[in-house]
Length: 547
Image (cartoon, rainbow, N blue to C red; front, top):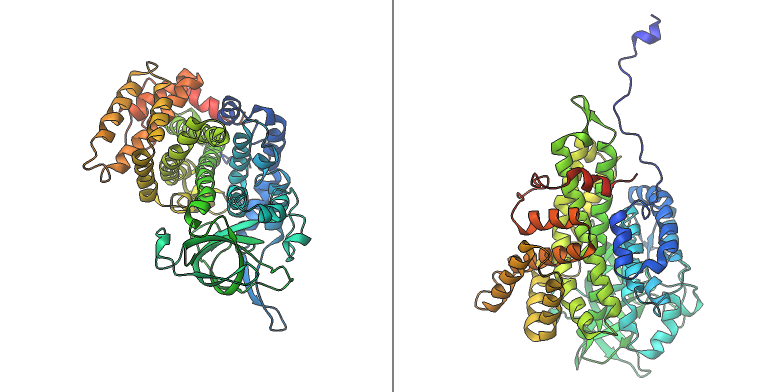
Protein backbone atom coordinates (compact mmCIF):
# COMPACT_ATOMS: atom_id res chain seq x y z
CA UNK A 1 0.00 0.00 0.00
CA UNK A 2 1.41 3.37 -0.99
CA UNK A 3 1.66 6.27 1.42
CA UNK A 4 -1.08 8.07 -0.47
CA UNK A 5 -3.41 5.06 -0.25
CA UNK A 6 -3.01 4.89 3.52
CA UNK A 7 -4.62 8.34 3.78
CA UNK A 8 -7.65 7.50 1.65
CA UNK A 9 -10.32 7.32 4.37
CA UNK A 10 -13.39 6.63 2.26
CA UNK A 11 -14.92 6.67 -1.20
CA UNK A 12 -18.00 8.73 -2.02
CA UNK A 13 -20.96 6.51 -2.76
CA UNK A 14 -24.70 6.27 -2.02
CA UNK A 15 -25.13 9.91 -2.99
CA UNK A 16 -27.81 11.15 -5.37
CA UNK A 17 -26.26 12.54 -8.55
CA UNK A 18 -26.94 16.18 -9.46
CA UNK A 19 -30.44 16.60 -10.78
CA UNK A 20 -29.08 18.31 -13.87
CA UNK A 21 -31.11 20.06 -16.51
CA UNK A 22 -34.60 18.77 -17.19
CA UNK A 23 -37.82 19.93 -18.85
CA UNK A 24 -39.93 21.26 -15.96
CA UNK A 25 -43.08 21.26 -18.11
CA UNK A 26 -42.83 17.96 -19.97
CA UNK A 27 -42.06 16.06 -16.75
CA UNK A 28 -45.01 17.51 -14.83
CA UNK A 29 -48.05 15.39 -15.66
CA UNK A 30 -50.40 17.19 -13.27
CA UNK A 31 -49.50 20.58 -14.73
CA UNK A 32 -49.84 19.48 -18.34
CA UNK A 33 -53.23 17.89 -17.73
CA UNK A 34 -54.48 20.97 -15.85
CA UNK A 35 -53.34 23.30 -18.63
CA UNK A 36 -55.29 21.30 -21.21
CA UNK A 37 -58.29 20.81 -18.93
CA UNK A 38 -58.61 24.53 -18.26
CA UNK A 39 -58.22 25.68 -21.85
CA UNK A 40 -54.54 26.61 -22.23
CA UNK A 41 -53.44 23.66 -24.34
CA UNK A 42 -52.91 25.83 -27.42
CA UNK A 43 -49.78 27.19 -25.66
CA UNK A 44 -48.24 23.72 -25.32
CA UNK A 45 -45.22 24.41 -27.57
CA UNK A 46 -44.39 27.67 -25.80
CA UNK A 47 -44.76 26.07 -22.37
CA UNK A 48 -42.59 23.15 -23.39
CA UNK A 49 -39.89 25.52 -24.60
CA UNK A 50 -40.00 27.48 -21.35
CA UNK A 51 -39.99 24.23 -19.38
CA UNK A 52 -36.54 23.52 -20.81
CA UNK A 53 -35.36 26.99 -19.80
CA UNK A 54 -36.93 26.78 -16.34
CA UNK A 55 -35.43 23.39 -15.56
CA UNK A 56 -32.08 24.40 -17.04
CA UNK A 57 -30.55 27.85 -17.28
CA UNK A 58 -33.08 29.53 -15.00
CA UNK A 59 -32.54 26.96 -12.26
CA UNK A 60 -28.80 27.58 -12.35
CA UNK A 61 -29.21 31.35 -12.41
CA UNK A 62 -31.50 31.15 -9.40
CA UNK A 63 -28.69 29.97 -7.16
CA UNK A 64 -26.39 32.81 -8.21
CA UNK A 65 -29.04 35.53 -8.01
CA UNK A 66 -29.85 34.54 -4.44
CA UNK A 67 -26.23 34.25 -3.35
CA UNK A 68 -25.70 37.88 -4.42
CA UNK A 69 -28.30 40.06 -2.74
CA UNK A 70 -29.23 43.48 -4.19
CA UNK A 71 -27.44 46.51 -2.75
CA UNK A 72 -28.83 49.98 -2.16
CA UNK A 73 -26.82 52.77 -3.79
CA UNK A 74 -28.17 55.98 -2.29
CA UNK A 75 -25.56 58.27 -3.90
CA UNK A 76 -23.25 58.11 -6.87
CA UNK A 77 -19.51 58.70 -6.42
CA UNK A 78 -19.95 62.43 -6.99
CA UNK A 79 -22.50 62.82 -4.20
CA UNK A 80 -25.62 63.00 -6.34
CA UNK A 81 -28.67 61.32 -4.84
CA UNK A 82 -29.63 58.40 -7.11
CA UNK A 83 -31.62 55.93 -4.94
CA UNK A 84 -30.73 52.98 -7.13
CA UNK A 85 -30.56 49.26 -6.38
CA UNK A 86 -27.64 47.29 -7.78
CA UNK A 87 -28.22 43.70 -8.90
CA UNK A 88 -25.97 40.82 -9.89
CA UNK A 89 -25.95 40.01 -13.64
CA UNK A 90 -27.71 36.72 -12.85
CA UNK A 91 -30.76 38.68 -11.68
CA UNK A 92 -30.87 40.67 -14.90
CA UNK A 93 -30.59 37.50 -16.99
CA UNK A 94 -33.47 35.91 -15.07
CA UNK A 95 -35.58 39.01 -15.69
CA UNK A 96 -34.63 38.99 -19.35
CA UNK A 97 -35.71 35.37 -19.79
CA UNK A 98 -38.88 35.87 -17.77
CA UNK A 99 -39.95 38.78 -19.95
CA UNK A 100 -38.82 37.11 -23.17
CA UNK A 101 -41.18 34.21 -22.51
CA UNK A 102 -43.98 36.44 -21.24
CA UNK A 103 -44.25 35.58 -17.55
CA UNK A 104 -45.39 39.20 -17.07
CA UNK A 105 -47.49 39.68 -20.20
CA UNK A 106 -48.41 36.44 -21.99
CA UNK A 107 -52.07 36.74 -21.05
CA UNK A 108 -52.33 40.31 -22.37
CA UNK A 109 -50.43 39.53 -25.56
CA UNK A 110 -52.86 36.65 -26.22
CA UNK A 111 -56.00 38.23 -24.80
CA UNK A 112 -58.04 37.18 -27.83
CA UNK A 113 -57.54 33.49 -26.96
CA UNK A 114 -59.60 31.69 -24.32
CA UNK A 115 -57.28 30.23 -21.71
CA UNK A 116 -54.65 32.97 -21.97
CA UNK A 117 -54.59 33.44 -18.20
CA UNK A 118 -54.21 29.68 -17.78
CA UNK A 119 -51.20 29.56 -20.09
CA UNK A 120 -49.65 32.56 -18.38
CA UNK A 121 -50.25 30.97 -14.96
CA UNK A 122 -48.36 27.89 -16.12
CA UNK A 123 -45.44 30.08 -17.25
CA UNK A 124 -45.34 31.76 -13.84
CA UNK A 125 -45.57 28.36 -12.10
CA UNK A 126 -42.51 27.18 -14.03
CA UNK A 127 -40.57 30.41 -13.46
CA UNK A 128 -41.26 30.42 -9.72
CA UNK A 129 -39.77 26.95 -9.31
CA UNK A 130 -36.42 28.19 -10.57
CA UNK A 131 -36.22 31.72 -9.12
CA UNK A 132 -38.74 33.26 -6.78
CA UNK A 133 -37.56 36.83 -6.18
CA UNK A 134 -38.03 38.00 -9.75
CA UNK A 135 -41.58 36.74 -9.51
CA UNK A 136 -42.40 39.93 -7.59
CA UNK A 137 -41.77 42.53 -10.34
CA UNK A 138 -43.04 40.15 -13.04
CA UNK A 139 -46.26 39.53 -11.12
CA UNK A 140 -46.91 43.19 -10.43
CA UNK A 141 -46.20 44.17 -14.01
CA UNK A 142 -48.74 41.58 -15.16
CA UNK A 143 -51.36 42.56 -12.61
CA UNK A 144 -51.10 46.35 -13.11
CA UNK A 145 -52.71 46.23 -16.56
CA UNK A 146 -56.42 46.22 -15.54
CA UNK A 147 -55.88 49.17 -13.18
CA UNK A 148 -53.94 51.26 -15.71
CA UNK A 149 -56.65 50.62 -18.29
CA UNK A 150 -58.91 52.91 -16.24
CA UNK A 151 -56.91 55.86 -17.61
CA UNK A 152 -56.70 55.67 -21.42
CA UNK A 153 -53.96 58.29 -21.77
CA UNK A 154 -51.72 56.48 -19.30
CA UNK A 155 -52.54 53.16 -20.94
CA UNK A 156 -51.51 54.53 -24.33
CA UNK A 157 -48.03 55.36 -23.04
CA UNK A 158 -47.42 52.52 -20.62
CA UNK A 159 -49.17 49.38 -21.84
CA UNK A 160 -47.06 48.83 -25.00
CA UNK A 161 -43.98 48.89 -22.77
CA UNK A 162 -45.51 46.84 -19.96
CA UNK A 163 -46.47 44.10 -22.40
CA UNK A 164 -43.16 44.20 -24.28
CA UNK A 165 -41.05 41.05 -24.20
CA UNK A 166 -37.86 43.10 -23.94
CA UNK A 167 -36.21 43.63 -20.57
CA UNK A 168 -34.78 47.14 -20.40
CA UNK A 169 -33.11 47.96 -17.06
CA UNK A 170 -31.95 51.42 -18.16
CA UNK A 171 -33.01 54.39 -16.02
CA UNK A 172 -34.92 56.46 -18.58
CA UNK A 173 -38.35 58.06 -19.03
CA UNK A 174 -40.92 55.47 -20.06
CA UNK A 175 -41.25 56.92 -23.56
CA UNK A 176 -37.59 56.16 -24.27
CA UNK A 177 -37.64 52.53 -23.09
CA UNK A 178 -38.31 49.30 -24.96
CA UNK A 179 -39.85 47.60 -21.94
CA UNK A 180 -41.05 48.65 -18.47
CA UNK A 181 -41.86 46.99 -15.16
CA UNK A 182 -44.39 48.10 -12.55
CA UNK A 183 -44.36 47.86 -8.76
CA UNK A 184 -46.74 48.75 -5.95
CA UNK A 185 -46.88 50.91 -2.84
CA UNK A 186 -49.96 50.40 -0.69
CA UNK A 187 -49.15 49.84 2.97
CA UNK A 188 -47.81 52.24 5.58
CA UNK A 189 -46.26 51.44 8.91
CA UNK A 190 -49.23 52.58 11.00
CA UNK A 191 -51.85 50.62 9.07
CA UNK A 192 -50.56 47.60 7.14
CA UNK A 193 -53.55 45.94 5.49
CA UNK A 194 -55.78 48.70 6.88
CA UNK A 195 -55.02 51.12 4.06
CA UNK A 196 -57.72 53.51 5.28
CA UNK A 197 -55.23 54.39 8.03
CA UNK A 198 -52.77 55.73 5.41
CA UNK A 199 -51.57 59.32 5.78
CA UNK A 200 -49.82 59.90 2.45
CA UNK A 201 -51.43 62.78 0.56
CA UNK A 202 -51.62 63.83 -3.08
CA UNK A 203 -51.81 67.49 -4.09
CA UNK A 204 -53.32 68.50 -7.45
CA UNK A 205 -51.05 70.63 -9.67
CA UNK A 206 -51.97 73.14 -12.35
CA UNK A 207 -51.07 70.73 -15.17
CA UNK A 208 -53.38 68.01 -13.83
CA UNK A 209 -50.63 65.93 -12.27
CA UNK A 210 -50.20 65.42 -8.52
CA UNK A 211 -47.39 65.82 -6.03
CA UNK A 212 -47.34 63.13 -3.37
CA UNK A 213 -45.97 63.58 0.13
CA UNK A 214 -45.74 60.68 2.55
CA UNK A 215 -44.19 57.26 2.95
CA UNK A 216 -44.65 53.55 2.23
CA UNK A 217 -43.58 50.83 4.64
CA UNK A 218 -43.43 48.17 1.91
CA UNK A 219 -42.51 49.56 -1.49
CA UNK A 220 -42.16 46.46 -3.57
CA UNK A 221 -39.53 46.22 -6.25
CA UNK A 222 -37.87 49.67 -6.10
CA UNK A 223 -36.04 48.86 -9.34
CA UNK A 224 -39.27 49.21 -11.36
CA UNK A 225 -40.04 51.99 -13.82
CA UNK A 226 -43.24 53.04 -12.05
CA UNK A 227 -45.48 52.08 -9.15
CA UNK A 228 -49.17 52.15 -8.38
CA UNK A 229 -49.51 53.90 -5.02
CA UNK A 230 -52.36 54.94 -2.74
CA UNK A 231 -52.61 58.51 -1.45
CA UNK A 232 -55.39 60.71 -0.09
CA UNK A 233 -57.00 63.62 -1.87
CA UNK A 234 -59.91 65.63 -0.53
CA UNK A 235 -62.20 63.09 -2.24
CA UNK A 236 -60.63 60.13 -0.40
CA UNK A 237 -58.01 57.54 -1.26
CA UNK A 238 -56.83 57.67 -4.85
CA UNK A 239 -54.68 55.37 -6.95
CA UNK A 240 -51.72 57.02 -8.68
CA UNK A 241 -49.10 55.98 -11.20
CA UNK A 242 -45.74 57.25 -9.94
CA UNK A 243 -42.82 56.94 -12.42
CA UNK A 244 -39.20 56.64 -11.40
CA UNK A 245 -38.27 59.34 -13.92
CA UNK A 246 -40.37 62.46 -14.48
CA UNK A 247 -41.44 63.32 -18.04
CA UNK A 248 -38.70 66.00 -18.17
CA UNK A 249 -36.03 63.34 -17.56
CA UNK A 250 -35.26 64.26 -13.93
CA UNK A 251 -35.41 61.76 -11.09
CA UNK A 252 -38.64 61.67 -9.19
CA UNK A 253 -38.67 62.71 -5.53
CA UNK A 254 -38.68 59.15 -4.19
CA UNK A 255 -36.20 58.54 -1.40
CA UNK A 256 -35.32 54.96 -0.50
CA UNK A 257 -34.76 54.80 3.26
CA UNK A 258 -33.52 51.23 3.35
CA UNK A 259 -33.93 47.78 1.81
CA UNK A 260 -35.79 45.22 3.90
CA UNK A 261 -33.66 42.49 5.47
CA UNK A 262 -36.04 39.64 4.66
CA UNK A 263 -36.31 36.01 5.68
CA UNK A 264 -36.29 34.95 2.04
CA UNK A 265 -36.90 36.40 -1.41
CA UNK A 266 -33.24 37.39 -1.37
CA UNK A 267 -32.77 38.15 -5.05
CA UNK A 268 -35.54 40.75 -4.96
CA UNK A 269 -35.34 44.17 -3.28
CA UNK A 270 -38.15 45.40 -1.05
CA UNK A 271 -37.87 48.84 0.47
CA UNK A 272 -39.13 51.60 2.71
CA UNK A 273 -39.50 54.96 0.97
CA UNK A 274 -40.51 58.56 1.44
CA UNK A 275 -42.19 60.77 -1.17
CA UNK A 276 -41.01 64.37 -1.06
CA UNK A 277 -43.45 65.86 -3.54
CA UNK A 278 -43.14 62.97 -5.99
CA UNK A 279 -44.72 63.43 -9.42
CA UNK A 280 -47.69 61.13 -10.10
CA UNK A 281 -50.79 60.86 -12.25
CA UNK A 282 -54.25 59.77 -11.15
CA UNK A 283 -55.41 56.32 -12.24
CA UNK A 284 -59.18 56.03 -12.41
CA UNK A 285 -61.34 58.35 -10.32
CA UNK A 286 -60.53 60.37 -7.22
CA UNK A 287 -61.68 58.63 -4.08
CA UNK A 288 -61.85 55.24 -5.85
CA UNK A 289 -58.25 54.26 -5.29
CA UNK A 290 -58.93 51.14 -3.27
CA UNK A 291 -61.38 49.77 -5.82
CA UNK A 292 -58.93 50.58 -8.63
CA UNK A 293 -55.86 49.01 -7.07
CA UNK A 294 -57.84 45.96 -5.90
CA UNK A 295 -58.02 44.93 -9.56
CA UNK A 296 -54.25 44.64 -9.36
CA UNK A 297 -54.41 42.93 -5.97
CA UNK A 298 -56.84 40.28 -7.24
CA UNK A 299 -54.33 39.16 -9.85
CA UNK A 300 -51.38 39.27 -7.48
CA UNK A 301 -53.35 37.07 -5.07
CA UNK A 302 -53.80 34.55 -7.87
CA UNK A 303 -50.04 34.72 -8.37
CA UNK A 304 -49.59 33.91 -4.68
CA UNK A 305 -51.46 30.67 -5.40
CA UNK A 306 -49.34 30.07 -8.50
CA UNK A 307 -46.08 30.76 -6.69
CA UNK A 308 -46.88 28.57 -3.70
CA UNK A 309 -47.97 25.74 -5.99
CA UNK A 310 -44.68 26.12 -7.85
CA UNK A 311 -42.72 25.93 -4.59
CA UNK A 312 -44.54 22.72 -3.74
CA UNK A 313 -43.70 21.22 -7.10
CA UNK A 314 -40.02 22.07 -6.91
CA UNK A 315 -39.75 20.73 -3.35
CA UNK A 316 -41.41 17.53 -4.55
CA UNK A 317 -39.00 17.29 -7.50
CA UNK A 318 -36.03 17.52 -5.14
CA UNK A 319 -37.46 14.90 -2.79
CA UNK A 320 -38.30 12.49 -5.61
CA UNK A 321 -34.87 12.78 -7.18
CA UNK A 322 -33.04 12.21 -3.91
CA UNK A 323 -35.09 9.25 -2.73
CA UNK A 324 -34.84 7.48 -6.08
CA UNK A 325 -31.05 7.39 -5.78
CA UNK A 326 -30.36 7.18 -2.03
CA UNK A 327 -30.29 3.82 -0.23
CA UNK A 328 -30.96 3.17 3.45
CA UNK A 329 -31.08 -0.18 5.20
CA UNK A 330 -30.40 -1.99 1.94
CA UNK A 331 -33.12 -0.44 -0.22
CA UNK A 332 -33.73 2.73 -2.17
CA UNK A 333 -35.63 5.23 -0.05
CA UNK A 334 -38.32 5.61 -2.70
CA UNK A 335 -39.07 1.87 -2.53
CA UNK A 336 -39.70 1.79 1.21
CA UNK A 337 -43.38 1.80 2.23
CA UNK A 338 -43.31 4.67 4.70
CA UNK A 339 -41.28 6.91 2.38
CA UNK A 340 -43.68 6.01 -0.42
CA UNK A 341 -46.52 7.25 1.77
CA UNK A 342 -44.74 10.55 2.33
CA UNK A 343 -43.87 11.04 -1.33
CA UNK A 344 -47.36 10.10 -2.50
CA UNK A 345 -48.90 12.51 0.00
CA UNK A 346 -46.63 15.34 -1.13
CA UNK A 347 -47.49 14.56 -4.75
CA UNK A 348 -51.20 14.58 -3.91
CA UNK A 349 -50.97 17.95 -2.18
CA UNK A 350 -49.06 19.43 -5.11
CA UNK A 351 -51.51 18.16 -7.71
CA UNK A 352 -54.48 19.48 -5.74
CA UNK A 353 -52.80 22.89 -5.46
CA UNK A 354 -52.07 23.23 -9.17
CA UNK A 355 -55.53 21.92 -10.08
CA UNK A 356 -57.29 24.58 -8.00
CA UNK A 357 -54.88 27.29 -9.13
CA UNK A 358 -55.41 26.71 -12.84
CA UNK A 359 -59.16 26.35 -12.38
CA UNK A 360 -59.23 29.82 -10.79
CA UNK A 361 -56.98 31.10 -13.59
CA UNK A 362 -59.61 29.89 -16.06
CA UNK A 363 -62.29 31.70 -14.07
CA UNK A 364 -60.23 34.91 -14.20
CA UNK A 365 -59.74 34.43 -17.92
CA UNK A 366 -63.46 34.00 -18.54
CA UNK A 367 -64.64 36.65 -16.08
CA UNK A 368 -65.21 39.30 -18.76
CA UNK A 369 -67.44 36.93 -20.73
CA UNK A 370 -69.28 34.92 -18.06
CA UNK A 371 -70.66 36.50 -14.85
CA UNK A 372 -70.61 33.14 -13.09
CA UNK A 373 -66.90 32.73 -13.77
CA UNK A 374 -66.27 36.28 -12.54
CA UNK A 375 -68.08 35.42 -9.30
CA UNK A 376 -66.06 32.21 -8.90
CA UNK A 377 -62.83 34.11 -9.51
CA UNK A 378 -63.84 36.68 -6.89
CA UNK A 379 -64.38 34.18 -4.08
CA UNK A 380 -62.12 31.36 -5.30
CA UNK A 381 -58.99 33.50 -5.39
CA UNK A 382 -59.31 34.33 -1.69
CA UNK A 383 -60.12 30.71 -0.79
CA UNK A 384 -57.20 29.38 -2.80
CA UNK A 385 -54.72 31.96 -1.59
CA UNK A 386 -55.62 31.20 2.00
CA UNK A 387 -55.28 27.44 1.81
CA UNK A 388 -52.51 26.79 -0.72
CA UNK A 389 -50.22 29.40 0.81
CA UNK A 390 -50.85 27.99 4.29
CA UNK A 391 -49.98 24.46 3.20
CA UNK A 392 -46.71 25.32 1.50
CA UNK A 393 -44.33 25.77 4.48
CA UNK A 394 -45.26 22.41 5.98
CA UNK A 395 -45.07 20.71 2.61
CA UNK A 396 -41.62 22.13 1.78
CA UNK A 397 -40.35 21.17 5.24
CA UNK A 398 -41.51 17.59 4.72
CA UNK A 399 -39.61 17.50 1.44
CA UNK A 400 -36.52 18.72 3.29
CA UNK A 401 -36.88 15.82 5.67
CA UNK A 402 -36.79 13.40 2.74
CA UNK A 403 -33.23 14.59 2.13
CA UNK A 404 -32.29 14.49 5.79
CA UNK A 405 -29.50 16.84 6.83
CA UNK A 406 -28.68 17.62 3.22
CA UNK A 407 -32.05 19.32 2.90
CA UNK A 408 -30.96 21.84 5.53
CA UNK A 409 -27.78 22.82 3.69
CA UNK A 410 -27.67 25.79 1.33
CA UNK A 411 -25.97 23.79 -1.44
CA UNK A 412 -29.39 22.27 -2.10
CA UNK A 413 -32.29 24.46 -3.13
CA UNK A 414 -34.56 23.42 -0.27
CA UNK A 415 -33.41 25.99 2.33
CA UNK A 416 -34.19 28.74 -0.20
CA UNK A 417 -37.60 27.19 -0.93
CA UNK A 418 -38.30 26.93 2.79
CA UNK A 419 -37.41 30.57 3.44
CA UNK A 420 -39.65 31.54 0.55
CA UNK A 421 -42.55 29.33 1.61
CA UNK A 422 -44.20 31.66 4.19
CA UNK A 423 -44.12 34.76 1.97
CA UNK A 424 -47.25 34.27 -0.11
CA UNK A 425 -49.48 33.73 2.91
CA UNK A 426 -48.41 37.17 4.17
CA UNK A 427 -48.11 39.14 0.94
CA UNK A 428 -51.26 40.79 -0.44
CA UNK A 429 -53.29 40.06 2.68
CA UNK A 430 -52.64 37.56 5.45
CA UNK A 431 -54.81 34.54 6.18
CA UNK A 432 -57.32 36.45 8.28
CA UNK A 433 -57.75 39.03 5.53
CA UNK A 434 -58.50 36.27 3.00
CA UNK A 435 -61.06 34.62 5.25
CA UNK A 436 -62.82 37.91 5.92
CA UNK A 437 -62.77 38.64 2.20
CA UNK A 438 -64.50 35.31 1.52
CA UNK A 439 -67.21 36.13 4.07
CA UNK A 440 -67.62 39.64 2.66
CA UNK A 441 -68.06 38.33 -0.86
CA UNK A 442 -70.54 35.65 0.12
CA UNK A 443 -72.67 38.05 2.17
CA UNK A 444 -72.62 41.08 -0.15
CA UNK A 445 -72.44 39.38 -3.54
CA UNK A 446 -74.94 36.49 -3.61
CA UNK A 447 -73.69 35.41 -7.02
CA UNK A 448 -70.40 34.30 -5.41
CA UNK A 449 -72.21 31.73 -3.26
CA UNK A 450 -74.09 30.47 -6.28
CA UNK A 451 -70.84 30.15 -8.26
CA UNK A 452 -69.02 28.43 -5.39
CA UNK A 453 -71.68 25.81 -4.82
CA UNK A 454 -72.18 25.42 -8.54
CA UNK A 455 -68.55 24.39 -8.81
CA UNK A 456 -68.82 22.05 -5.83
CA UNK A 457 -72.06 20.42 -6.99
CA UNK A 458 -70.65 19.81 -10.47
CA UNK A 459 -69.16 16.64 -8.97
CA UNK A 460 -72.28 15.67 -6.99
CA UNK A 461 -72.58 11.92 -6.58
CA UNK A 462 -68.94 11.29 -7.56
CA UNK A 463 -67.76 10.69 -3.98
CA UNK A 464 -69.78 10.42 -0.75
CA UNK A 465 -67.24 12.38 1.27
CA UNK A 466 -67.50 15.35 -1.08
CA UNK A 467 -71.30 15.24 -0.99
CA UNK A 468 -71.21 15.21 2.81
CA UNK A 469 -68.74 18.09 2.87
CA UNK A 470 -70.89 20.26 0.62
CA UNK A 471 -73.81 19.73 2.98
CA UNK A 472 -71.67 20.70 5.95
CA UNK A 473 -70.56 23.91 4.20
CA UNK A 474 -74.14 24.93 3.46
CA UNK A 475 -75.06 24.57 7.13
CA UNK A 476 -71.86 26.28 8.31
CA UNK A 477 -72.56 29.36 6.19
CA UNK A 478 -76.19 29.57 7.28
CA UNK A 479 -75.16 29.81 10.93
CA UNK A 480 -74.07 33.45 10.80
CA UNK A 481 -73.88 34.24 14.52
CA UNK A 482 -70.32 32.98 14.97
CA UNK A 483 -69.27 32.71 11.32
CA UNK A 484 -66.37 35.16 11.53
CA UNK A 485 -64.93 33.29 14.51
CA UNK A 486 -65.16 30.00 12.60
CA UNK A 487 -64.13 31.37 9.24
CA UNK A 488 -60.68 29.78 9.06
CA UNK A 489 -62.19 26.32 9.45
CA UNK A 490 -64.94 27.11 6.97
CA UNK A 491 -62.60 28.51 4.30
CA UNK A 492 -60.19 25.61 4.78
CA UNK A 493 -62.98 23.13 4.13
CA UNK A 494 -64.17 25.17 1.13
CA UNK A 495 -60.70 24.87 -0.37
CA UNK A 496 -60.51 21.13 0.21
CA UNK A 497 -63.98 20.61 -1.21
CA UNK A 498 -63.11 22.66 -4.31
CA UNK A 499 -59.93 20.66 -4.82
CA UNK A 500 -61.86 17.42 -4.42
CA UNK A 501 -64.51 18.49 -6.92
CA UNK A 502 -61.93 19.51 -9.52
CA UNK A 503 -59.89 16.32 -9.12
CA UNK A 504 -62.98 14.09 -9.34
CA UNK A 505 -63.98 15.72 -12.62
CA UNK A 506 -60.39 15.52 -13.91
CA UNK A 507 -60.89 11.78 -14.25
CA UNK A 508 -57.92 10.15 -12.50
CA UNK A 509 -59.56 7.91 -9.90
CA UNK A 510 -56.34 7.14 -8.01
CA UNK A 511 -55.70 10.84 -7.43
CA UNK A 512 -59.31 11.85 -6.77
CA UNK A 513 -60.17 8.98 -4.43
CA UNK A 514 -56.94 9.32 -2.46
CA UNK A 515 -57.58 13.03 -2.05
CA UNK A 516 -61.24 12.74 -1.03
CA UNK A 517 -60.64 9.80 1.30
CA UNK A 518 -57.77 11.55 3.05
CA UNK A 519 -58.69 15.24 3.02
CA UNK A 520 -62.48 14.96 3.19
CA UNK A 521 -63.07 11.51 4.64
CA UNK A 522 -60.78 11.70 7.63
CA UNK A 523 -58.36 8.97 6.50
CA UNK A 524 -55.40 11.22 7.21
CA UNK A 525 -53.38 12.46 10.15
CA UNK A 526 -52.12 15.92 10.94
CA UNK A 527 -48.84 15.50 9.02
CA UNK A 528 -47.88 14.35 5.53
CA UNK A 529 -47.26 10.65 5.03
CA UNK A 530 -50.46 9.47 6.69
CA UNK A 531 -52.46 8.30 3.67
CA UNK A 532 -54.66 5.25 4.23
CA UNK A 533 -53.79 1.71 3.16
CA UNK A 534 -56.11 1.91 0.17
CA UNK A 535 -54.25 4.77 -1.51
CA UNK A 536 -52.33 3.94 -4.68
CA UNK A 537 -48.97 5.03 -3.31
CA UNK A 538 -46.78 3.69 -6.10
CA UNK A 539 -49.13 5.11 -8.72
CA UNK A 540 -49.16 8.57 -7.17
CA UNK A 541 -45.37 8.63 -6.90
CA UNK A 542 -44.90 7.41 -10.47
CA UNK A 543 -47.35 10.02 -11.77
CA UNK A 544 -45.35 12.80 -10.07
CA UNK A 545 -41.94 11.56 -11.21
CA UNK A 546 -39.43 13.10 -13.57
CA UNK A 547 -39.04 10.02 -15.74
